[in-house]
Length: 371
Image (tube, rainbow, N blue to C red; front, side):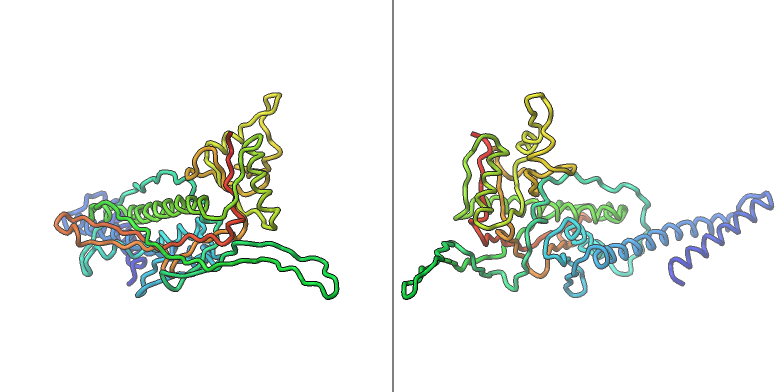
């Protein structure tokens, strides 16, 4: 008999017993009291087992049917998910954290142990995460090894011209160079967590795994902004008139070279300052440079308000100018039930390997948004 069938049978038996006692106008005898207590305890256990099974099935279907990504597993344990679009999307990040959590803490409970879960409805509430959207805008490439190389263009000079018969043809310069890249390990541990707390609250495992993954991505995002804004060969734009005008001028430098704009990154306070700009009549600017949406983009460009740029700067990035490299595993969360065995505590380790790539430096502009 499976858990669902057993649960139905127990409920039916308890319902019948209660109806019989009420019909006869009597109290439960000692045998019946013991039967009810045992059945009630079994019902709690079966409900918890069914809930865990449904949750695991839902997490798996989330990644396979709605998450749109390919799962990555090692020895049968799912540890990562890759978006089919090749981008690290918020959905794929969530799926990665959830998938990693599915099989984690059950290893803490020894096989064959009897577990009576305590029903708690105390799902932890996570603090906000700012600026995580940057990586969702960057193409992701899977690398076969920790060290890799890619080709970046450093010079593009078009000298095509009308040439008379017998004359020497001009030479255009399209200089490229090989750039060595390396996947770096990003990792951190959770603080020791009481094993019984994890047992009693099934939401806590997913919460810790998701928080660790968010924290890791937060660090990668900050490093990406720093790497892209300091890369050799990028363009610069001095402050010109207003912050919005300066960003437009920086974007124009990129588009004048034939690149399309991918996105703009600027500090939260600078974005807010621009958004709150008023005209001479004290009215908020609602048209240019802003267009539509709850958090409209600057000059119609995808705009990310980020805590990772210093106030007074903005980063304009062209399509395909940058990339994120990773391995074929993705973000991995593992639980160690042995380190703090004598204290009955467990620790989670969260890690992944990432490389930050700059393919087209000329398609990046670092803009000064204040004088």
